[in-house]
Length: 176
Figure 1 (cartoon, helix red, strand yellow):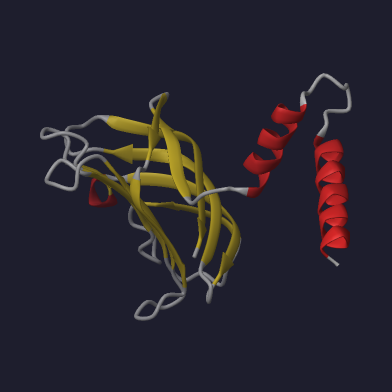
Figure 2 (cartoon, one colour):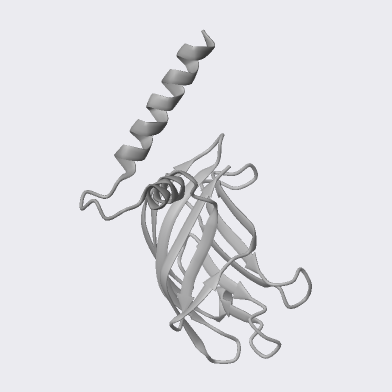
């Protein structure tokens, strides 16, 4: 019985390695295994470019679809930096939503949907929210129990300092 299990494991391993090979034949076995593990190990993330510079949340990544206490909401959020007064916090809250779709909203929208960045610097402590925002968010997946949110986004956030943050290439992936 053990020999059969070992043989089956060996055959499956060889098939996995062969199926991961590049069609051109230029991949090595090590490269194929790395490619396969990258595809299957997507981690929760929130990232974007702000005025062309990459910003990546390194903690506090959270997503929710119709969470308790909110009516028809999608919540996207994450933080970067030390957990103190200089922690940069970004979030998008989309209200009055049934689920996946494309949402375009700006400050003063009737649903009160909002995008905001807090604590960019001591001079620029609030961008978006009541300072001004214009966002386009494409939610491709949204579910509850377990919470799953996948989205892309771009837009502009006006800061208290008068600076405007142009957000591009925004991606959010959260699987509870």
